Image (cartoon, rainbow, N blue to C red; front, side, top):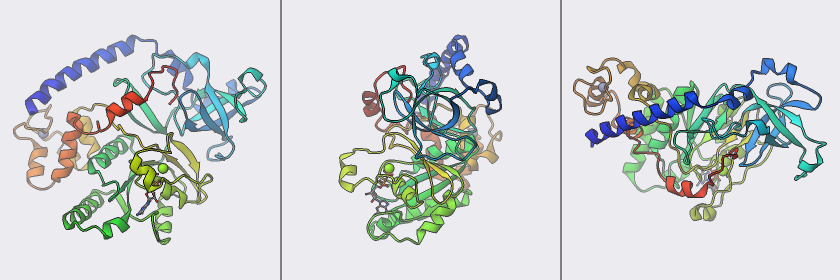
Length: 394
Ligand SMILES: Nc1nc2c(ncn2[C@@H]2O[C@H](COP(=O)(O)OP(=O)(O)O)[C@@H](O)[C@H]2O)c(=O)[nH]1
Ligand SMILES: [Mg+2]
Ligand SMILES: [Zn+2]
């Protein structure tokens, strides 16, 4: 199996190089002209132009909220926006030129009657400020292109439920890799603690306790809470609020784990729909698009949709070892410079796993991501569900 992996990997490298060569030669000017540092916006600002925050991105349009100076956005003041035509090209490396959390410069279209197809005020997004951080997955339609899920967040909150749905440690690790790469603090919230209390499988309970303790040992903050469900206690609220307050948090995790329930504890400007168990079992998601929500306790949260496919772009073993913080002390200590830490002799990481200094399940996560064996769940459903649309913003 490992041999096959090496073969597959070299083919992938070749394919990737081809893509990069193509990119170098393709006209990527639309992306370049679109991104302008905020300090350089002033000469472009004319009457009717305003700074805003992207609060929701749909396929053909986005919602933005005016934000004259940073962190003054009211997510109740919503404008319907489209992207300036000149930027609607299909030669870009990113599926979406704008993402939730982007700071943008908009031109009001209030008086252009032909565009009036909504009650909301309308505008065109002319420029975007560079992103201080971004979270992206691979576009399920074009695997050489990124789908930016959110930008400019200050922390990543990975939400999982112990049960219903059962926690997937591998998914948590994939999110942690992204956080490490972006230099973002990641916090784990393990929800539905009440269900764990009534669980009758002692091995599962033990594994959960061990894994949570291990993440804490690695330096991640871990909260075990009950955000909703029957008779949920209010006392967890302050502990949760302390995590969200005055941050721009990106909430990620499978549908049904309790993300909206968590947001609703933080006095959001817009109350979030909480799925009923019945709807969840049928597999329908009401939160389809990520949205930027102002919290009454201070700060903002971006709630991401229940994404079925969370495939992160290919990484070299070196890139990936950086995403696993406990692997870092061993970087450069293997016999072979290009060691992938799979089966090579005198591998420092394999030795650390043997010695118990790196946990076996974190190591398995590493191998899963490296070989592309994890994260493909439901990719086919998604593939069929999303139309091939070059003008799509989402
Ligand atoms: N038992 C229990 N159910 C919860 C808890 N938190 C949320 N739920 C329920 O789980 C379901 C999904 O919650 P929701 O917040 O919509 O999850 P989201 O899809 O991640 O936004 C809803 O029926 C909630 O009532 C919890 O701590 N315990
Ligand atoms: Mg939700
Ligand atoms: Zn190695």
